[in-house]
Image (tube, rainbow, N blue to C red):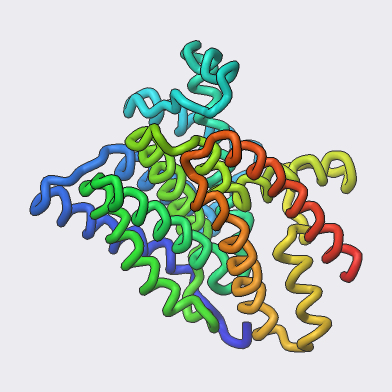
Length: 305
């Protein structure tokens, strides 16, 4: 970036979202404790980094796990249906059910933080997810959740206006963690409220955030031979940036074009899942096939950078 850009996106989004939630609570009698508790604590955790309070990766992970244990138990917020019967049987065991939902939150929140590196990448990606969730809940007449998602979408559009294509403001870790918590809570609540939709459809919806973390974890261990908790510059969106930079020879254009290309490809890939969201067998196999698509794109980009 040519000028100094402040990481105030998370703070402004959190304040705006809090005001929207207060309005819905007092005037529309719409309140979900999961949103208030999960989003507030993860926003505050990310804010520490934005304020230059350095926390070692292993301690940050431990803090996330501790927070999630408290939040999940206090809100009684569990996943009971996965689309795989043997896994559903394990979820009847309390400790396994707790471990499973913690893992889900960790993947999505850390995935959100991981891809938040280019103008509009996380913002547009989150907007696509929330628009799809809004449409689904509106269709199934989950009006309370639809109203919350509509408010999130409005605030997202305003944020993207100031973050894309040229960034006047960044999300920071506080915003990335907040977005991750919002996405995770919204997807899980939608899945619980609409059991006719295959759980693997929601896996398809989240595959980019999930697999970015999953692939990165094992790539660092077995290929880079380093701690999976340490950052590097070998992620898909970073390789895409290097590839575009060679073609455009322009930092600013390559920066925002990464967001455009990745989110267009992502949207096209999830369209079949949207069409067949109630077909559990299709969604299951399509979800796993997306891993191969990701790995193919990664190898091609890695070879060209």
